[in-house]
Image (cartoon, rainbow, N blue to C red):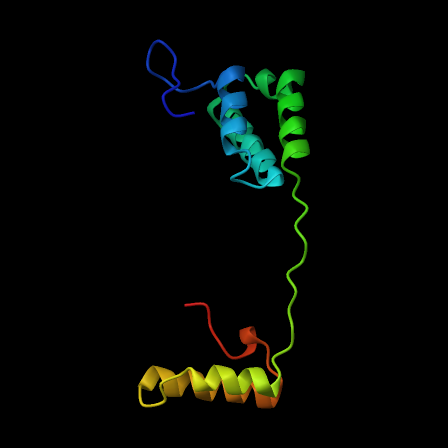
Length: 127
């Protein structure tokens, strides 16, 4: 929607063509279901500001969104997650420099996780 504005310079209320262009611009870069959420958030913002929301019920916008969903379906196959075998662990450890603090720390974490059958979330933290 960048660069699209009314004559007075304001961006709101958004016009149908602007929203459609925005949806098409997001297509392929953002999941289809997330595009629908973003349009719903924009509608919610219009409600908060007291603007007319009829543009969001327009059948043409619905068709554009359906077309994007058809062209870019959200069907992603689940990633294959193979178990770490002893051989894989040995290969991992051989790549670490155990003379550094980081290498020793990673080696300890990997071997502990392997020995205790831990998932990564059970011995790491997000920060």
